[in-house]
Image 1 (cartoon, rainbow, N blue to C red):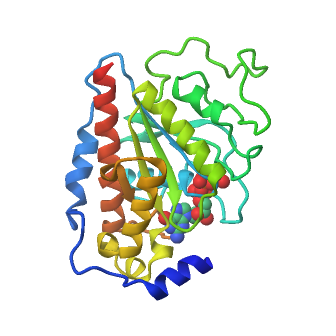
Image 2: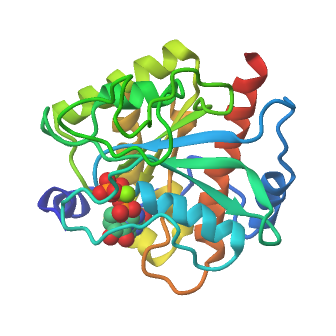
Length: 287
Ligand SMILES: Nc1nc2c(ncn2[C@@H]2O[C@H](COP(=O)(O)OP(=O)(O)OP(=O)(O)O)[C@@H](O)[C@H]2O)c(=O)[nH]1
Ligand SMILES: [Mg+2]
């Protein structure tokens, strides 16, 4: 645990008596049904494309796996996640489908994983690449190069010159961890991406991961998540630094070491997934 987090534990009252956001615990099946029933209204849209981006090691791939896990009802690990050793793990742009009911049938949304942002200007994913991916110019399998953004004559033919509705990103999800301090450079990159998404009209949400490691009360009982003063402050900080509305920021505990699913972990993941899908659907219908 980082020293600053440890300090926060010591000097802050950890839990409020009342939760500051209402959430229905004990009934994940309600949100699950909403996700299961989702079908894009626009017949041209085969799938909603949800892109995750954020700092290296923040839990982007783990979030994709967590969504897969909740929807399958058993542990899933399609998007490889890594041990927290501080090195970037995901290097390619890849969209994951999630199986629904039987092999060969899928939910009508994709989760696109990206390489992480780094605190150094010349490291991690290039902001330009994320901007191009938002517009659908980057094909699956592209290896992000920290040295240069993709070019129109990419030698691996991963540049899509004429993206259609299905290639474009319809919802952008920023994934950040409660545990890591984001340096100005990383924040600058994320704000830059957010401004581009805003210009394109793409809805943006943010999730705050590793809430279990940041708060002992939440580690003990996830239902304390909206009672934790520390997490509330972290959510406010993210709101102020990135400019994402408070109602679009969600704390999440990813599946990382469990061997079985947990109803409260599912509730938090489904709560954000439902909002992601609704925002994406609204965006497509506005086009
Ligand atoms: N305790 C805890 N650990 C988490 C959580 N989310 C992710 N982790 C761990 O954090 C580490 C990094 O997770 P990844 O999913 O690989 O992060 P990433 O953002 O995809 O990382 P890069 O691909 O390297 O950019 C892994 O060891 C995960 O198990 C969480 O909510 N709680
Ligand atoms: Mg990853």
